[in-house]
Length: 381
Image (cartoon, rainbow, N blue to C red):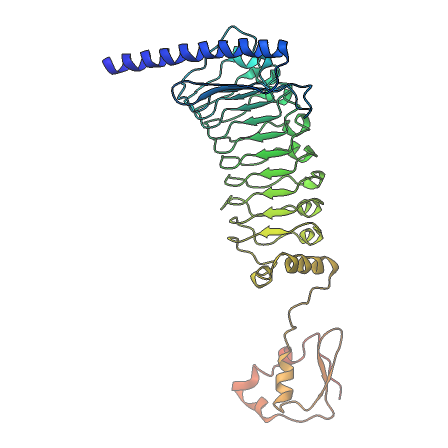
């Protein structure tokens, strides 16, 4: 009981200190904004971690815009302070490496000008619906939490360029993610429980990196060719689930790196042979048949050539199995001349020669008319 009281007291003291520091920082921000301060920096130690602010004049020679950064990372916070101040002047907020289980709706709704929000490595089970108010948000890092889904309001974050949701418990992404987050350039959702990617993913035409490894993906959207700027696609380590790759992957004209390793893929789509910019291809850990592993071992260019030849129909076929008639002829059983007939193999016999072996019951089956005179054989006397 005494221990719990001490913990509560320590937490309260910590929150009081954080609140006071934040108020001081907000006042300094306002003063700096009014005075057009150049290169002003403040760092205040609170327990473990630093609460900081960086301010740069938007009229400086370097052309940098005014930035206000609040860093509350690594402070073992269980809850967040809610200072009665204007939070709209914050552009970057770092709440990472704490013990947060939730973010107050009222706090998020006041971060109207935040560009970067980092809440990775907490214990968040959900994001506030008010995150949809962050219309200027460009980078959102929620990795290393306990999220099962995103609120639908995240569709309103239309300025978002990078979304990092690695190491959560996501079972699905918003169905409309590709229709609304049109400026998204990097989507990282590895180490989750995703069974599929929404159809709208193929509408993220500005996407450059898609990382969906270590999930439970059963398939990929069919029309990925719309991702004209995609450079890196990683769907590796979906293990026993992912067995096929859509043909449209070979139509990703900007693709440089493709990783489909450690899945159940038996054949790569032939269209991959058309990927002119592809420089790295990882396919290990698959029961791959086409292309065969001896081709894969020779590198990405040989694989592309192999698949391209299959498209053009110039891939060397396996040697045709020779007819057993040829073996009999070679052994002198038949004295005939080879003649191709209807794409098959036949023989012209110069004269009829009796074969004593045919009178033996032991060989009657071997030289029966059904066996000797197949539809593709041709004999003339």
